[in-house]
Length: 232
Image 1 (cartoon, rainbow, N blue to C red):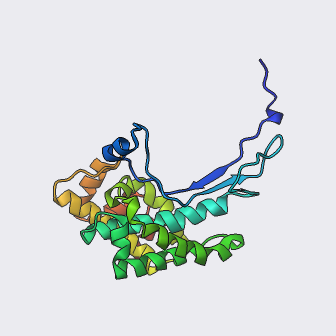
Image 2 (cartoon, one colour):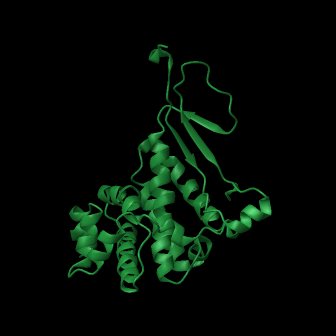
Image 3 (tube, helix red, strand yellow):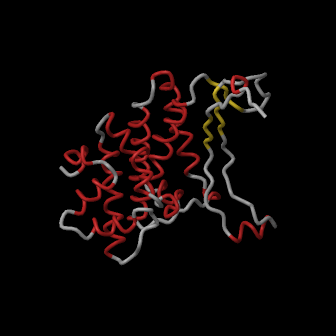
């Protein structure tokens, strides 16, 4: 069988919807072993690139370029989530809705969203204020029960594209504090003898126990170039 690849298309896509880890209680309540909690908000953006007629899917945005929308989600939503995870856990909070209810963390999270939004492509800049306010409402959702320790997982893999790429486009206080919060989290967890849920957990532990833990941790996530900003 020969495939005519000129007739095939693979549109890029981006989905924005918060889905916390499921629990046994949720599975029992739904009587469904595959049940997963999610929020009411949903956004699905698909590249307008089809070999045949475009599907008639309600509530889907068809755009020429998905990347600006993807960057908005990564830098504003995911970046703020990571900041709240590490800073919130340090304050003794367990859930996103608890952390975002802290007046100082709320101000910092909103500042991070706006700082990150300023780095987005120009054609999506007008969406930044409304998206930031919508994120605050989504983070306030107590029913979602989104655990901070879930978001804190795999920090070495998440920070480069959630925080570091944004920071390289503009040094801002909250973005810097987000990286510092991750480093403090790694050092504190290691000091307690706890292994991080991260593919580089052993490397992180060695770095945290070294003579220069912050510098070693930055090296692990490829942020040596940002050391003058973060460690000043």
